Image (cartoon, rainbow, N blue to C red; front, side):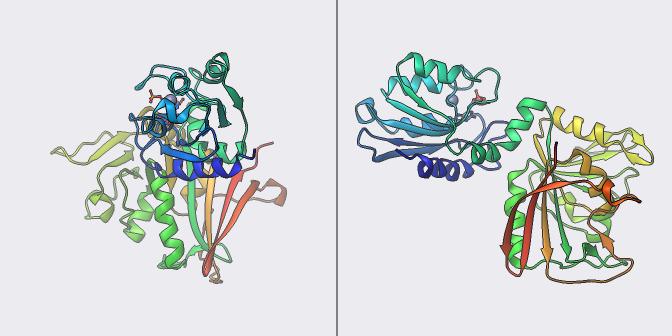
Length: 350
Ligand code: AOF
Ligand code: ZN
């Protein structure tokens, strides 16, 4: 029996929870009866609510699921958290076979869910579309294994790597479809992070549930920049600061290293604040300094050549003498958003 199509469906279902499950994983589940007909589906819809397996099973009775198969992209849990263990529920529903995409990296589960199922006589098939399942939960994996916030960068450049002319003209580089995709990407992340320079140059709204601005000298707070209209805004700045009345804006005093706010501090603070993933949308300077913290890059390219000697580049932060000193990446995907393309790439780790 080939379970890949069902696992793909689990991944699709899991993605319906994007933007709503953090710090918990994205999980989807498909249930087959003893004749291998799909009888139910479910996904983890929102942090703190039912796990995917429970959502799929509660619609059924153990009579319907007896000797059936349950497919899920993440090992079923074995612990009492916000809900009782999914492994116990699966046993109660008399499922015969459980097909899993990846083992849980949460140390309280890590293999214990599988053990529980096997001890109850259930056959467990592991590793179906494992790479895809790991990619789906790359944020959860980084959070759980490294105790750090997942950092992504989004940039949009011309064929010659420019994001603006010498005098800052940048609207628009990419077309409609690419900009629609940016909205989908933004939704996956807990917060968007930008710099005061980008706020001042472009006055973007960057509509989101949480926006972060790196603004050492509080250059953006005296003007009515659109970004402050979002639900929650966090400003990292050098000096202690507070607005007189309680607002949607909070300020975080941040150390400075070599004239810039200390990014080590910023990213550690974000994890402390339970912001599990962040998407950076800024200019070449911040993109460049954030590169060494980055886990993933979304890079749109428009079929245009600017050719401006002094145009601004998407990563612009140092002088290098030797081509062998470049940072290296692994390109994961090339997608078309006509007339533009998007490269998704990861830092190359040896
Ligand atoms: C989910 N949804 O569909 C699955 C999860 O915070 P709790 O008590 O809900 O437990 C969260 C842990 O449960 C999570 O870290 C992961 O290890 C496991 N599986 N979590 O939120 C799900 N299957
Ligand atoms: Zn569970």
